[in-house]
Image 1: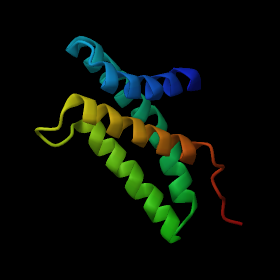
Image 2: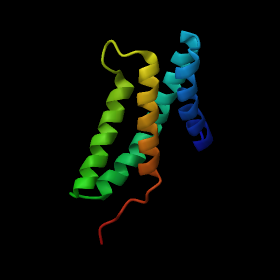
Image 3: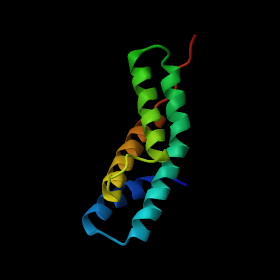
Image 4: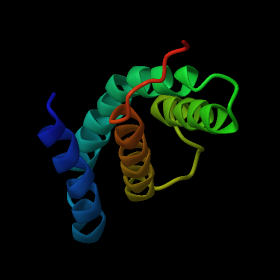
Amino acid sequence: MSLVDVTRDVRLAGAVVLSRPTRDVTVALRDRMRAHIVMLAEPAEAYGRSLGGEWYGQYVLTCVASARKAVAGVEPGIRIDEELLLLAEYIKTLLMYTSRKPRHSA
């Protein structure tokens, strides 16, 4: 899975919401997006932990935990198109965190 694949799927989620494809297509995209979150969560979490007790570090860790919760399944009754958009936002957030270098204690 490359960064190109991840960003393509984030863009595809927006297009899917507008085009209303078959359920098989949306489920396959949702599964790929969940896999992207699983892949990105660990380095994003490492970045959050590297911030120590700073409030922003705790915020990052909370975002990662929320993304992981979304992978496990969202609230009952949410439409799949809404779920795709939610997963896309989590992916964009995790990508931002993984692009930052962890801070190390001196």
